[in-house]
Length: 430
Image 1 (spheres, rainbow, N blue to C red):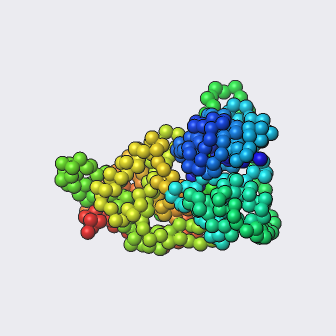
Image 2 (image 1 turned 60 degrees about the vertical axis):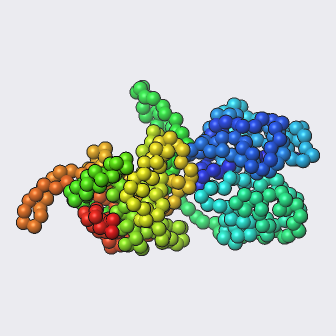
Image 3 (image 1 turned 30 degrees about the vertical axis):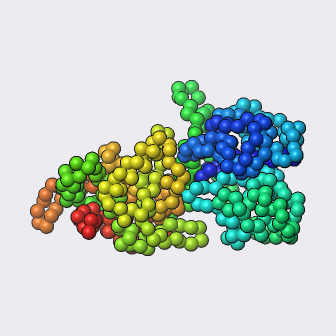
């Protein structure tokens, strides 16, 4: 029986993808590690590698087909002793349409580079999915082998054919029965046809959603529905920072380095997270993870969406190092060339619309982050200094906070530390 090759999950947020390009054709012999196709995820175009060896039997999804759900069969692989007549009897879908996944299709998704898949035994102990090739799963099912007892020797601990070929049969553990949970029916959103009828007779252009826009819509809906946001607002005087920045840029000019206000904001947030470690945290479902390093994500707008590349260990890096790293990440984000490990993770995010003239706004938390800082434009305005009214450059900051992770007083302490760092920029270099 031919093995089905399934659409992999090439990033933790991927639910569907576009089969951008096939790099094999029916009859090609492949081995583990060979590149089978280029797949466009919600964030980037990535290569998909073969896990098992065999001969490509049939391509079930046409090149360029979009909206292919994860774990949908996209091709068949003939293993040793099989011929082309042994391929699945289901006829291939029309061009551009993915084959429908069957209930019996085994789960097979590529591991993410930033988080190696656990071994089968450890995965079962932790309640995670066991990573195994389709052929290994089939052999295990035929021989009655419990995959949780098998140590995988494949990439990132994946169980492959050779691991189960000589394994002794074991009694599979029955899955615990899940207690039914009564949930109220959710209000269904208006369908496309319903909305279209509302604008019948009016001219409009219809823009179909790509993978990135679908993911943004799903994650932000989840964020606003499930995260109890609250907001803290402060103003920060920028005059000392602007003067210090000008001085540094003059000294760094021979090296081709030019610091932005955003570079100082990243550094200020990173140091504040170290000064208030309880706020350097993420929500993990039934617990809070308090992070040791300050991994700060920064929103980068691109055509059709945005990325939030993460500057890891930001508290340890110089302003010039942060500036160079941010420029590189932003450039590759706009070209959609970031690897998943470069935009996943972090405990805190920054969204800066000040450069676009926005004075203040409220940002939506990017789960599982504990908070996000919305940065407005620096505005010249009168301020009271002692008993004197003076003109100063003032910037508005709004901290959106997940109340499950950070309480009001703790959020205020974090915001205070950020403001103090920005108003005393030389102290950040100490």
